[in-house]
Every structure is written in C-alpha cells, then in structure tokens.
Length: 123
Image 1 (tube, one colour):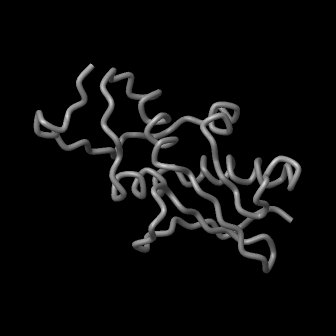
Image 2: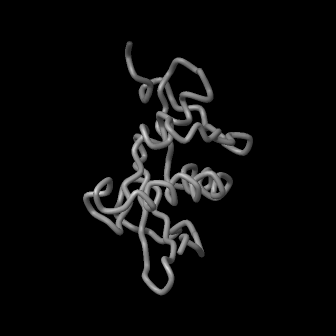
C-alpha cells in the first residue's frame, strides 16, 4: 500500500529541518529533510553563489509548496524498504535522494530577507 495523507509538521519541534508525516495504512511514517539538505537543494536552483541558510518558516513554506515532489521522493525511498532505510519506517531524505529523483524545487514563493553585513560569511 502506498503512503498517504502527507503533511508538513508546523509545530515548534526541535529538529533542524522539515518534518513530514504520512500514513502506511494505519501505521504512521515520519520523514525528515534537514535544513542543510534543503539549503543545498535551494542553492542548486538559485545559482546565487552566496550561502544564506533557510529559516524554519522558509523551509516549511517551501515544503508546503513542494509537497507533491517531496511526497514522491519520500515514497520512493520508503518503498525501497528497511535494507535502504536504516531507521525504517523513519525516512531520512538525503540530497542524493533528491538528486536521484530529478525533482524540481519550486522557489517562486521563497522570500529571502537581506541580512546585515555582519551575518554574511567571509569567503
């Protein structure tokens, strides 16, 4: 049975990234995409050269906007079973999973606030 009822966890959790919940029949499934993975995915689309990490409200909004793509990525990894997911049924989405999927990230609603100069990385 395929995963269903995907949703983004909007609660004030302590994990540094995007949490998704789904159902495998009656069994709950949790997926996680770290902030670092989301940053890399966004940078691969933006081609900005500079690095500015996403904040929780930004990656939750990106997750909501890209829920169909994330659903396909998580479902594909989940269907590979415990041999490919050490923490099955928990799914840790890696950038390699995203790259392999060839899914496009929709950044049309991403708003990046300008940071003061002291917050920019030195290169």
